[in-house]
Image (tube, rainbow, N blue to C red):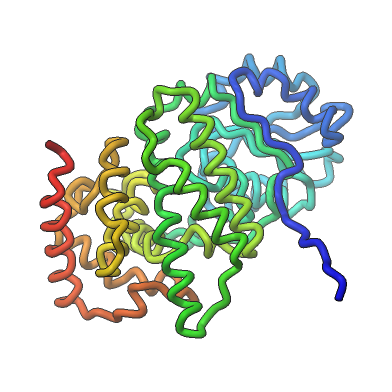
Length: 358
C-alpha cells in the first residue's frame, strides 16, 4: 500500500529577529512574493505614524492603507479599496486586529497575505482564522493562512508589556483546548487530528518551566515561534479547534456580556483555561498552569480580570452559546447557573490555596 505525503498549510517563510522589518522588500523579492515591491501595506490609524519611516524605507514602492477598526465591515471596506489595483500581495503590519482585518481582506480579493506582527498578543499571526466584530459581538471567519510571517523583535519589544504577556496566556490555553478536543473524541463526537494537537500542545509546553520571561530575546523568540506553530496547528485542523476550547468560549462570552470591560484576549483565555482545567478534577496540570500564568504576571482568577465571582459565573453559563458547534468540558458537565457559581468559588479558593502571589 502506497503512502501519501500530507500537505500541511503553513507559511512559506518565517523570519523572527531584530531588524526583520527593515528587509521587507528584499524578503518579498527573495521569497518570490513580489519582485517589484508593488504591494498593499495595511496598518492601523494609530500604528501608521510610529512605523512610517521604517515602512517607507523598507517598502518604497508600496501603497499604504489604514484600517480604523476590527469589524467585518472594516475588512470588507479594505477589500474594496485594494481590489482591481494589481497588487502582488497584501502586507498587514500591526497587532492582532490589523492582521485579522488584513487576512480577511486579502482572502476576499484572492491575494497572498504577509503577516508582520508588531506585538505577540495572540496566536492569529499565522492562523487561517480572522476574529472580527460582528453584530455587537465577535465572530470567527475562515481565511487563507499568511504566505509569510515577519516578526521584528526590535519592534515587538516596544509594545506594551501587558500585550506581550497576553500572548503567553493565549499559547498556554492550548493545553486546555487540546484536552477539550480529546474529550469530544472520547465521546465519539469528533476526531482529533493528532499532528495538529501535537503542535498546539508542544507550543504551550515550550513555555512551561522556563525561568526567563519577556525581557529575554530568547524567550521572545520561543513565544513568537509558539504563536506561529499554533497558527499552523489551526491550519492543519481546518479550524481553531487545536487552540480553542472552553477557554475561548468563556472569553467570547465575556466580550459579549461586558463589552466595555474586556481585558486582552490572552488574559481572558488564560483564566478560562485555568478554570476549565479545574473542572477536570483529575487534571494534575492545574497547579502547573496556575504557576505558569502567575510567573508572567497574568491573571489567575476572575478578580484579576476585574469581574466578581457572579459575573464570571454568568460568562461561563453563556459560554457554550458562543460556539454551539464546539464540545468542551462546559458542554459535557452542563452545569446550571447555581452549580457554576459554586464551582467558580471553589476554583477561586483552589487558586488562593496555591499562594501564587506570595
